[in-house]
Image (cartoon, rainbow, N blue to C red; front, side, top):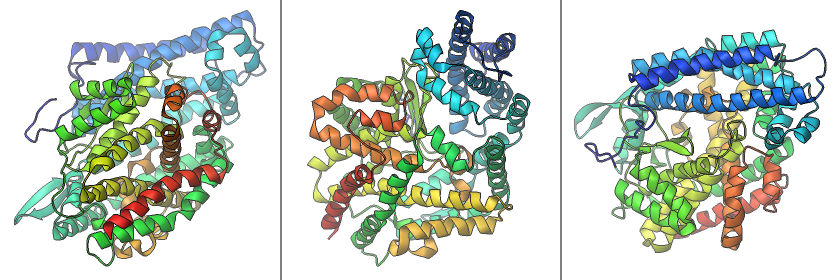
Length: 599
């Protein structure tokens, strides 16, 4: 583990390139851009685009398909690694001017590659895909992607319009998102700590929400509000522009609503979403009950927003990074040697960047790097919540490992299924910790898991409501910063009820949550992922050995089938509320246990 002043590691990117200034990086950067434009020429030569009439599937057609798809996949591997390397440099230092420049330089050729995907879908839409699959083993291996391409082809504009949209996105949604990311990652907040005024990065200020000193938490909370309020005008412009562009493109592409487009992208249908959301909304009172019990455990009449992460009680286990590492390795080993070995590599080979610092983005994520290798960003604090978060992100890395032998087209998995392994691994670690912990620590461990679940069940649900209403109103006009703020606060109050002091709700949530500025409706997939993962964990508890025989294969196929079809292999019907209720029952049992311990 790479050591720094506070003993938290930074990730190691040198297995890819020594630096952004290295000859190897520059050579690959130039070569990959050239290869993208060579692939454009190949598409032009073979007229891979929307034809005027249906294309007969002949031996020549099969050969063209295989040539195109093989080169598309090979180049996709290289671009994904290059893009991940640049993004990793930016995620840990948004002030890295060279990384910003390289990222900007890559945008135009990357948009050409995205446009090639659109052209390929248009061409495939003109073919008899069943005949192609019958005649080509490669097509058979990509059958799911080909069938989806046929649907995508029905939601495309003309080739000229798609090309123009790809070009304009560079100065549209992509540029607005870069502005959002650069602005928020560089924000600083003034907080007084031990009598000294300090200027903290926003991530460090948010970490003060874990501090046992309530007055410091309140001060930091109010300072964060003021800091976020200072950038509402430019970020309202960004959000209005991104959502406006989405609405325009959806209409031009024949989607009645952005949600329909996102459901297709996530490989689920309306009945599945409706069953899940109905069960979720019915569970609001259970999670409000958890929040009231948390207030009781803290000796408060009601929780404020800045009490949600406050430590429960004095003493107990603080969980250093080294202790987190040891515990995760032990518990992953109880599932399989393969899962433990993955975590061993992640710690030993410095896959994890754990130190909060200026210019680094907040939160946590896991990104594919190459051939099953991942990189994990976190902002570690000595608590079990941070241990649970590490286990969650390592679950994503385990998912990536199981996808390593798939092509880029085969591992283009929907967000709904992207949380499958992360939720499962998180639950393994949380349940193991509960078995041996003292009562006070049990309370803290349950609290960590329930805090995350509450962020998903109440938080992501309110995000979903906010985004629905935002799209509805954005059809008519831009929304002002004050309107966006009230829209966000109202959605949160409806989900959290009186369990959180309404006046302390994080009304500027819309300002700093990156999901609003990237893919539309990047919220309900978290609900799906949490509950689907818990449902699978329940199957594991019932039949551990039988479950293991199919689980890794499920992970390896998450980009190759509809969610309902993959779930059916485990006897799960996603369109029935019963499955979602059973998953929520797992969380209700944890809430019951938490309430009993808090009393």
